[in-house]
Length: 175
Image (tube, rainbow, N blue to C red):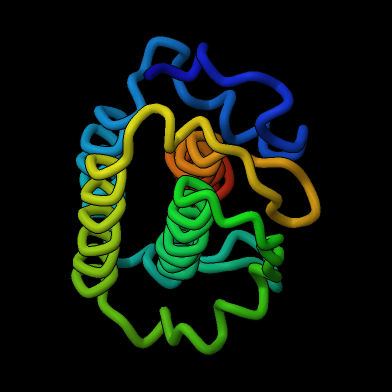
């Protein structure tokens, strides 16, 4: 299943900014394996001197951005799972900013964060391997809007790309 199979009715326009970061020919399950490698290599290559760097006051550090990717994957993987299992209970949104402080990302090493990312990604890959294409086409309600299980999954890998571009543009090019 590729991103081209997604229909506009499967996700709120807000998530399109992430989903559209995924190459139209990228297969969903393959995208998670390739994306895992891309994220790990990307963050591992960032010099340690920049791990705690934030490009402006009240902006996240690079380590906090990685923690945000980890937390977001957990939430959207859970959404994917619940929707794929035909759970029609509306799924609440989340305030990404309140998650960062309690995460203690600043106290973790980049290696710890990358291990946490890998564990979560492996979990998501295992989940996707257990779901049929019919499961992934199921639509539920997340953050008050329709969302298919596959749209939740594509959001994860597009969200990774979105934030890696931000790091490149606002953190690495100006540090």
